[in-house]
Image (tube, rainbow, N blue to C red; front, top):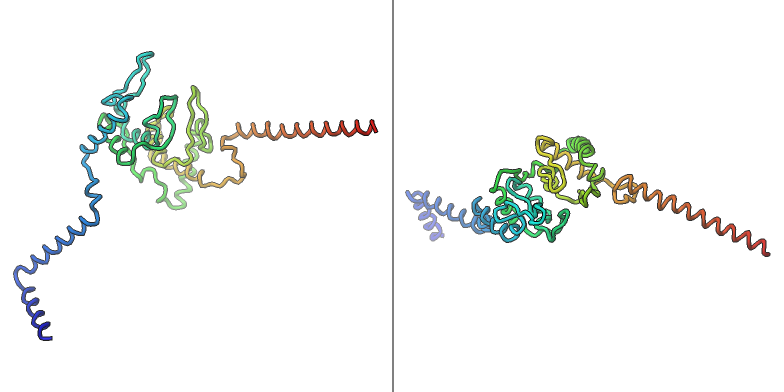
Length: 290
């Protein structure tokens, strides 16, 4: 007991010393720095400056993209008819690269009329580096923030209003190609409008912003950022809506429904009528012979 009292007395005297406050401060700083280094090493290592990100994107571009788009993104024309083998990327912006690479359309596995969505060849960090490099070639649309396209933070009333507004915009500007149900469809000259089912909201926003391939460009001057988000809210509502008919026929609208009605409906009735007529004739013939 006396030992504990003497120890407490010494600590109390040292605590009142001139260096006690400084020692406590240094110990606190060391502990804070140690804990930060222990629990967030990956964040510190993955952080890169813009110059480093652009340089990484340039290296990836030279390996995966320059054979079609040129060493500096200037594009490569064909020698036969003067058409562009790989278009120029100067001024397309980071949003176009994020859409094309993020959906796996680029790099193309083989030349064709239209790039198809497939498994992506670059991860998110590499896609960001490629986007940064192409953005450094010339000004263009930037990658949107999550607040631009996300509808998760809306209240129920705001969401319903956005769906109504987005539906009007979509039915006016998009159904001619993508169908009223967002299922897509055929286009002239061997092209097609892809299905919008299961597409990430960011990529839908970027597609409206940049107009990939045969799609028109809906810049912020044509359709505002809020209206783009309304369109996304409408498309999300279509995915969530149950199909009460049970048989959607691909959601392709009156063409598939009319074809189904003529081939299956009327065709089935004609076949049934022929079957009845054939069996009736055979029945009468058997009675006559008897």
